[in-house]
Image 1 (cartoon, rainbow, N blue to C red):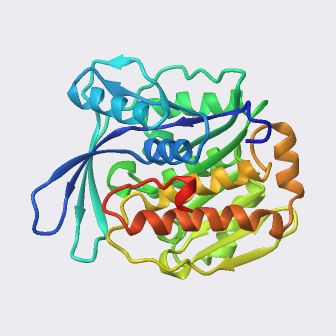
Image 2: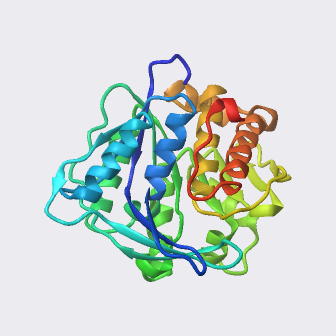
Length: 307
């Protein structure tokens, strides 16, 4: 990060993915979008703490061990509820659909003076009662840290998308960087073009809004200048898409940190003054991370050496 002292705080669910591949027996993996982002950021040589909610059970122990062995500090008190699970069912083409058994009540989230960037997203940002703790953390953290968000829409668990959209837009108002997939944007804003949605989000507060477009690359918009750019996707071979968006997010955050565009109040100011050329390396790092992830089975997180 900018001076080596800031720390990433990732807030959201860590769970067990029960992956049911087409015509194969199910296999369990550690997952959850925020947990995947935390691992991805740590693998790219950053100090990361994950504020999450785990049960006092074997699956919870497995998640803690998995995260800690990959360099993530886990901030989670034991809960009476079991550790959350998500069943991912992969079709013949590798695309995933999900069923969830979630428990999200992390309690007050400590920011800490060392935190320079906060990221949240997915189910943990909108699922009660924990969303109140997430929003409180963003409100408190904004006075010292830059903030990013990935909505990561899951209609089967999030409920009425009209209510979800309003809740997400409220969260976006606290953010400096927001990223979503084009599929998510189509669910939230059916029939509305990507540039129009990214402009709408930028007007709520963020300096950088990003839409990943799978094989069609990635589009992003700078709020201050109004520039809208689309970059082609790097070549890759798709094994499955599990964790691809999370890997992109981790690469994007790592790249923005390297460029001094996130990590504190001075970095926020630089982000809002940045031009396209300052942001493109971070976008490309995110795309490269995503391309590597889809070429492997599961939510693989690449290291800097692999980029």
